[in-house]
Length: 100
Image (cartoon, rainbow, N blue to C red):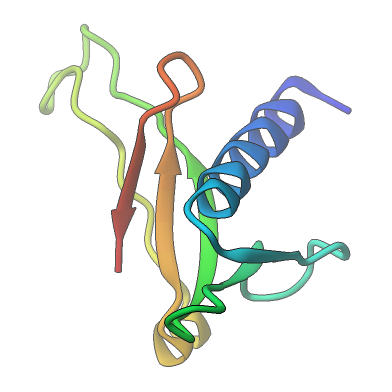
C-alpha cells in the first residue's frame, strides 16, 4: 500500500469512527469501486448519509494562487444525483469538514 492509499484509508477510518461515535451504524463499501466510501444510518432518526471521504490537502505556501488554502474536490454527476456528502478529514488534527 503506497502513502497516498494509506492516507486515504486513515481518513476513511477517521470519518467512519466519527459517524459511529455519533450513533450511526456504518456500512463500509469494500470494493472501492462504488460512488460512495460508506453508508451511515442513524437508527434513532432514520437519517441516511452516503459519504465520500477525502483527505484534506492545502496549497503550498509558495503557490501563486491563494497560498495555504484548502483544495476542494468535486463530486461526480452520479454522486450529485445520489446526494452524496463529501467529507474532508485532516490527518494531522482529526478535523472533519462536511460539504454537500
